[in-house]
Image 1 (cartoon, rainbow, N blue to C red):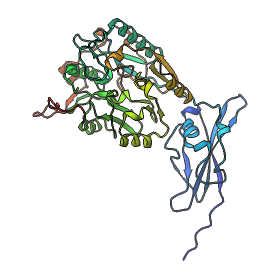
Image 2: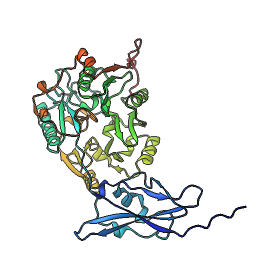
Image 3: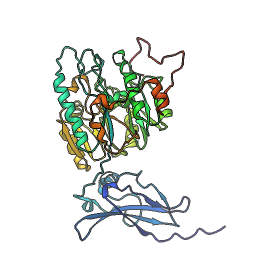
Image 4: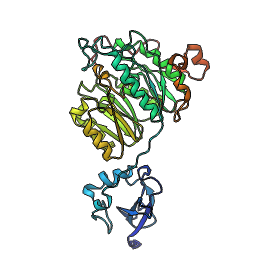
Length: 432
């Protein structure tokens, strides 16, 4: 019987930070399987001559030559310090295990990076509350359409001021909810999926948004078979697409969207009618970090969110009822409704720049900032501002007639069967 090779003494391997602290995604080292290697992690900070502080993660290892593996599920550096090390202490094994690192991390804020976005919006020219299809809507409560337009203009001006591009779709009479562009589809990697609304009040919007997306999405716009309400219930993260259900989007739509957009789906069931869309109960702050209201989800969904995002920000219910989570983040700036002070403070603590803006008039219809904003990921020209977006809406919106769609490379694929329309039965329950 061969004798096991003696374990090599533990040694330190420093992994320097080569850039802005907030932009680095740590990777650690661990012994190869079966070789008895162990890993310990500590974080140290050093002050450079110019006064800047730089971080490095020390991986204490023992055993043969290690291989690279994700040490912290690709968490941002700030998450490693504030969340991943329980009680400010290093984890696992090694001579530094248990050493207090809280003093080394005190007062050091992560620097976030803003990514230029491209959005689709619709001016609330005809905004009103004429029917009730969610908990928020009351047709007997007066709505100030002029105030809604002023608030919307301030929002789109803010996006432009942050360097983002805003595309517009022309509002139409008798469609008061068309301002909520996020419900008009979902666009990933230049491929768009249209919507099928649960309630008949908004179904005239479906083709309008589908044709507009066909003009903007270089990989085509697909007409869905099952009920889904766009980015209201589909939010993109690095882990995949978070998919809401329970009040609007059908569970069958999850598999359909996963196939069309070629991303994994994480179903999440909503249980509080006040948070009827996923984007009213959860906000994606960056690819690896979300904020959400735990009470809006059932127990299995809460457990799944905790596994996916152990560093997530949880928002108190009183601020969630301001639709604080119906916010938009570009990776650094988070645009959120006025009044969400504790959420704003939590964002600052994580290195974000919260920007509060009043969109209270839209809340009469159960909508907010995110509801009014559809992100065009991978759409033509995404990632850089376009001067032509300042043109009048009618001049800027390219009409996508069926012939133009077929010949222009923006193919509308109808995934419905000939026999079935995919509509729910007249008396079907709203949740599936």
